[in-house]
Length: 105
Image (tube, rainbow, N blue to C red; front, top):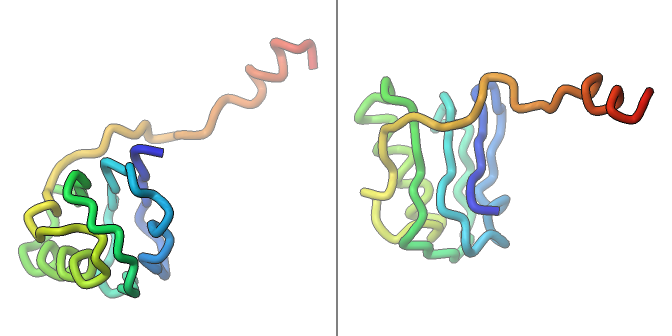
């Protein structure tokens, strides 16, 4: 897995969820409140990881998110948290009806 998208509305995000993802390149946080992020010790220290947050993220929120990922040793530098856009479609779910119709169902 190289990219993870976490959409807004998440009520609790424990950073240990990223423990077993040593080759992950991007974590896209789409509107995540920094207060729902729980920073446990993970020790991933991935210097190639980019954490993307929405363009309208305040400096304070950017700093808070970066600090939590840094304290959990997921990233090696707070500059890895950046404002940007994620390349995920609005509806990431496949069209189940279309898939089933290919099988005559």
